[in-house]
Image 1 (cartoon, rainbow, N blue to C red):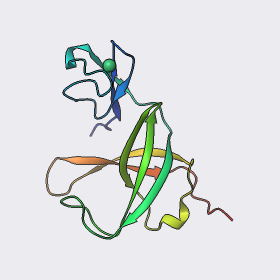
Image 2 (image 1 turned 45 degrees about the vertical axis):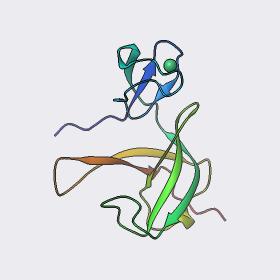
Image 3 (image 1 turned 135 degrees about the horizontal axis):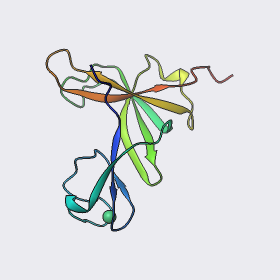
Length: 122
Ligand SMILES: [Zn+2]
């Protein structure tokens, strides 16, 4: 089983990045997909902010869940699930590794982000 790679779409017109890699167009300048190049996301990525949600905001989201704003590339911030059971282990600015989590129901899956350094801030 091959390990999925977190990919971005890099715009050849404006140089901006979009996520996911298969977007209908550049989110910055609107260039069509033909102008976008897929490239691997540089890792680690960094956590901006986070919140614990207790309501299932999306189908299949197990709650409570920790949702973070993650900087995938300069100017590209995405909301994603942080793979921790308790947000108290998180601090803004910490490094995260993308982990592909496949859905047991089918072949689909999603990216979650796991702290590289789980030490608790004193
Ligand atoms: Zn663009």
